[in-house]
Image: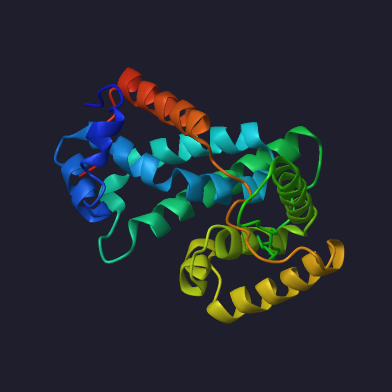
Amino acid sequence: MVSPGFDGATLATFADVPDFEIVQRVRAGDGSLFEVLMRRHNQRVYRAARAIVKDETEAEDVMQQAYINAFVHLGQFEERAKFSTWLTRIAINEALARRQKLRAAAGALPDHDDEDGIQMELMRSPQPDPERQAYAQELRQVLEDAVDTLPENYRAVFMLRDVEGLSTAETGEGLGLGEEAVKTRLHRARAMVRQAISSRIGGVTGNAFPFEAPRCDRVVAAVLERLSARALSPTA
């Protein structure tokens, strides 16, 4: 059974509990702990979905369904793999399915491009004043716009590898690609972004496509409500 969300203090008590232990407890019947997993991996799941559907609202819908799918099929998670990688793959599959539906609804022919990405960096001031903060925000927007214009077979690699910080192996596993393919696409994607943006931009991509607290709370609450309403349980 899934109960309403935890408060911050309660969530903090699980900060050092590894994913596999929480998964085991959810499987054993403490479904409320699934919230810990959602909050722990929300930003990564969002960025993976956002890389494919390129729309914030659609990305949130993808996240919710991906979490439902993960919860119901939790018994299929093999603990020799990282839970974050398994969850990211579910989100990617759901995002790809959503994208195909949107294209079909729009009368567009489906394609079979892979996902990708590219590196860009935002300038950071050690003591940001309002002017510098506004400039940094503009640079972040430039980066996000540049990523959105990338071919689909580069965008997801960038989002997972450079923005989210996954390793080459984790990115390849999540997207179903070999490590060499990830490296090649990332290299080409970075070159595209450098060409699209000015040479002044270069540094940090981790602040792009943030997943702020209000959005995190909204997605978690929606998933918990759906799980509770349907009285869903993870498979054994």
